[in-house]
Image (cartoon, rainbow, N blue to C red; front, side, top):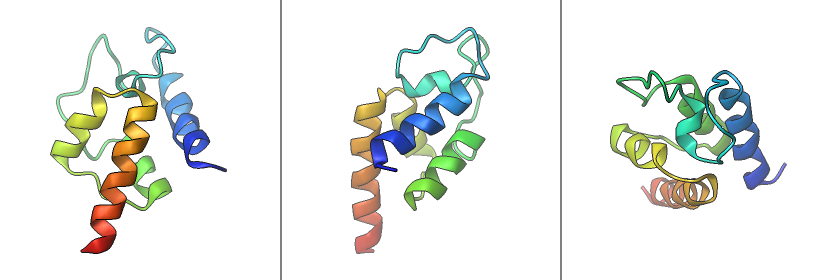
Length: 87
């Protein structure tokens, strides 16, 4: 499965849990937009993304990713992975 499809599959899995959210391809739709979580790092969607892309997402990264569209998020995740591989 290519990376775009991998992220979209995770997005679709968690977006379906929140019927109030449109299919806008925005990362925030993986959580309730009516009652957003106080903390998003370490939540199931980000844990699954970390595992699927072999990347660590800290609090700052989670905050950035939360407000991105899927294609921008994928670029961000790829950059994170590249930076983490160099360490």
